[in-house]
Image 1 (cartoon, rainbow, N blue to C red):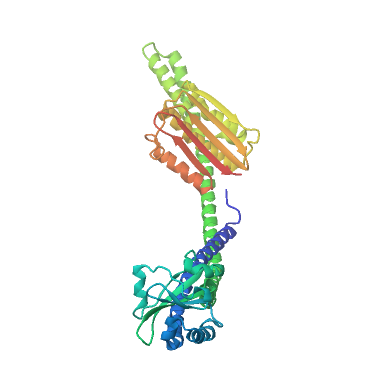
Image 2: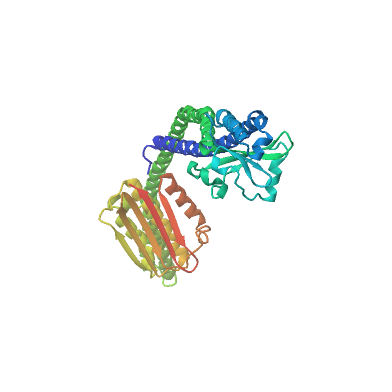
Length: 427
């Protein structure tokens, strides 16, 4: 049957997809902005460390600091506190010599302590390269920084007036990195997300108009289909009436005349007349069966159950065991009854002509607002994609009819295990 509120449904699907797209892009954007902010923060930390090392610390770095002279250490400590630590995200400063001794730190307990330096770290004592890494707070030399949480270490090379090479370290809070990411997101992320939301809202009227056009086209197609079905039904009724009142009645008269003539004919001619009369009556029966298929009178006079019983009659005449069950709520709209009749007609025609079944069952019921027709046989079965030999066209027409009314048609079959045709329509 027709879906309810298809335009609203299409718009809702668009809005849902737009929201999902905005959320997905937002998550990706936050990740990218965080990465970008982290990279920018590391660059800023390197630039800040380079400036502190070259313009603040190195000019105050004398050989007295290396020797542990208290006055030289106090002078350097004053410069570090005023120019490096005050008002910045730097929480610790250390200066090392190549032997692993900390010659200066703003934490006095570290001055003079020695810790092993890996050979690959000696390159940090020379050149102009600035390196950075997340601080390993589990190391003994970092025990005084553990309460700060995650830190970023930045290294720079220094040189005393006498030419001795040292390594300068600054430790930055993790908030220094997150603040950069938040700033980039505020500057660019909000604008980008706003543009995405605005684009989705601008497209909403277009989606509404497109859904209306599609809905109108569907309605026109359904109306054309309904007119075609109505015209076909009228034409079927007219053809059935013409055949019944014309050809069938004429043939019935011919049959009676032949029978009467056979009774009065000479012995050598009477058998031929009786055979002609029998063949005429057989033709009348076949025409009447065709009339039932063209325009089932029981479907219109007594309902779906009686019409389905007529369809099962040819199966019973061929020795096939049949069972028909129509639920108590089987009073469906006329178009649903007509569709069920055509579907059962096609399925039972295949049972008679192709399946070789010994039993066939037809069930009709209403459940959860849906009408269901199920035709099951124990015949030879077939490939649903191909259909039984000679029946592919009928199945394709049936699928098209069901699709046009918004129903579902399922054919469960395989060679050697019978067939179940299930048709479900929303009522």
